[in-house]
Image 1 (spheres, rainbow, N blue to C red):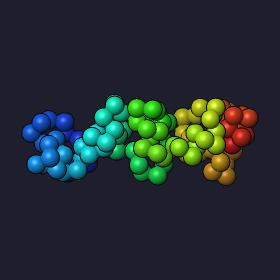
Image 2: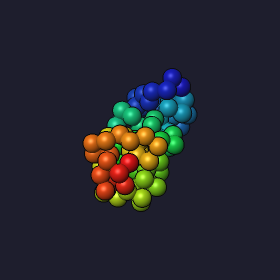
Image 3: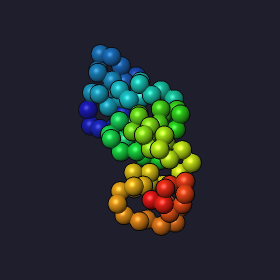
Image 4: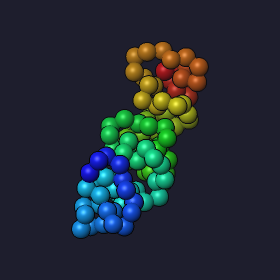
Amino acid sequence: GDGKCDKSPFYNNEQCGFDGGDCILHIIYPDCDTSLINNLEDGICDSSTNTLECQWDGGDCTDFNEEYPLCSVEHPEAVGDGFCHGGLYNTPECNFD
């Protein structure tokens, strides 16, 4: 339970609590191949895990994707946060941020 999933079968098994809980997200999202898997289900929409394989960041990006389906930015959590970020954020697709 050090916050990092050790995928070794010696630790990542039911008897060891899937590495003390560190690997549970790897079981829930088996096709999500990212070193940032712990960002899933944290309440922040992360672009690196906003994919079908990661089930839209564990659901964190569902509302963003519905509201801004064509907005593709590095930090989706910044869209609509009350600050004008310019660039790709200041587009019709992102509702002019």
